[in-house]
Image 1: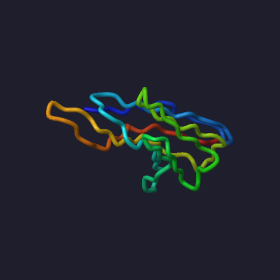
Image 2: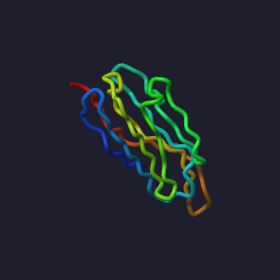
Image 3: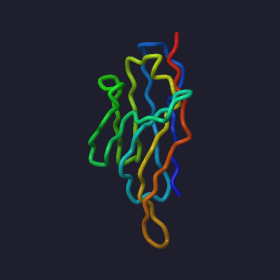
Image 4: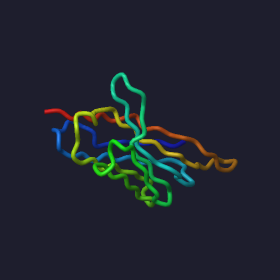
Length: 123
C-alpha cells in the first residue's frame, strides 16, 4: 500500500508565499508522474502543475511564472512553491502520484491522492 502525506497549507495574504510538500511512502517500486491539483468551492478539480520522473514540468496557465513544482526522487517527495499568491488561488490542494508498487506477486501501477490541504489567500 502507498500513502501520500501533504503539508504546508494555510492562510496567507495576497502577494505572499506558501510551500506545499507531499511525501509518498509504502512499498514503492517507482514513482512516475507527480503533480498538484486544486479544487475551489463550486468548481471542478483542476490541474495546477505536474512533473515527470525525469523532471519535465508543466503548469496551468493561471500559475505560470508564480508557482514552481519540484521533486526529490530519493525521498519520493514533490513540492509546490507558490509565490505572488492571489485570492483566486484559494482552494484545497491535492497531491497526486502515479506509483508502481511492489507486491508478493510482482509490481502494479496505481494513481494515489493525498487528503488535501487548504490554502486561503485573503487579507
